[in-house]
Length: 136
Image (cartoon, rainbow, N blue to C red; front, top):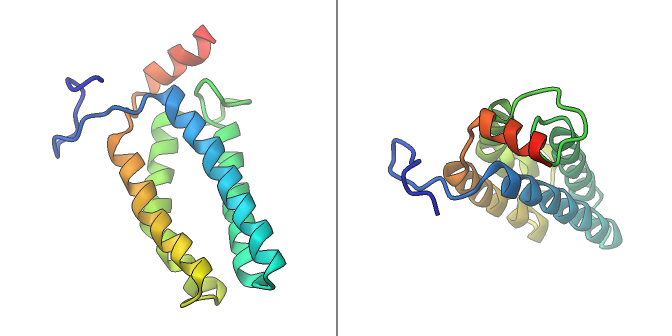
């Protein structure tokens, strides 16, 4: 672990761009699965939100300049800023899509905390991300 690279809050930046990319694709698959389950339980609003979230995460990941990106449209640092916005707003998705106070809503609410945690301990160094991409 690289404890020399810490945030202002003193949190160690233990998630590398390479590992963050793996987390991103798992995150997209997770929300796709949530969408499938919600579709089968007739929670169409939650299914739409989950599929939209999955698609957003997948496209964002494919367009990031890191090892797992397919077409580097934006930097890993920009990806981090987008993740921070998503983390701070994921909890409101059930309200916007109309499935507040359902079990599916808890997933989005929990995602805010999980996403914020990943954002807080990721090393958002775009140069490192680019170097890892070139090395791959």
